[in-house]
Length: 83
Image 1 (cartoon, rainbow, N blue to C red):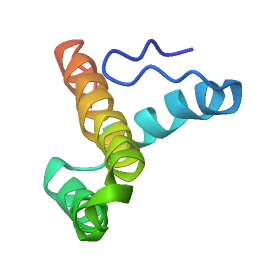
Image 2: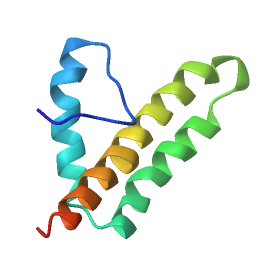
Image 3: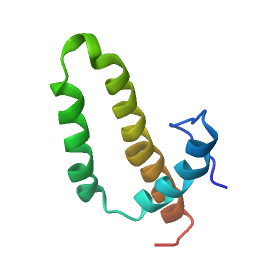
Image 4: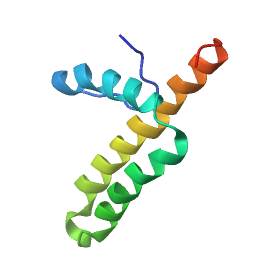
């Protein structure tokens, strides 16, 4: 099981799926991650203010998982000398 550094899931189902998503995101080139993150940010910014907090929190967690942990895994793999 991968150790996540940026995204710490609390729910069991999320804890089971998060390492797999981070590992899959680590194989996506960083430029392509922009296309995954842009709609998440746009969605979280388009919600009216009183309801924003849960959506912004969810968007931040998704970004941490994809960009933070995915890229951290990618960098660790590259430092070990594996593509």
